[in-house]
Image 1 (cartoon, one colour):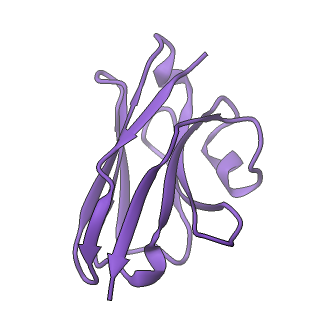
Image 2: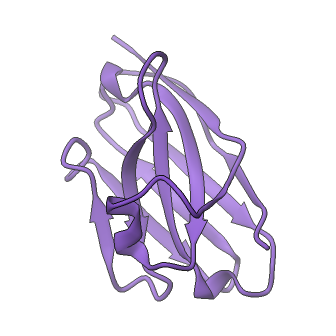
Length: 125
């Protein structure tokens, strides 16, 4: 069982930056691949970024490549998402997620995750 709590969302102007953090409970954090999804109003939840249990493998959605960076600290049970050059279309609720199926699972499925409660990111134009 993993419990996830996100923080760091807020309102920022286009071109600005935000850093999201996700704190996980549980002694087996390092065995989970971690990642982020987002969901904008009226749209389906979509993949944003994922990182393997070791931090050695990362995946990004094409829409955020080169702007977002995912990282993790297994000693602190945290995963972060650094978001730069934000655009209005990045506006969404961002969800932290954990899965035992590996980081590539984030590219294939919206199921079999532990989820955080979500944090709102709003980018104004």
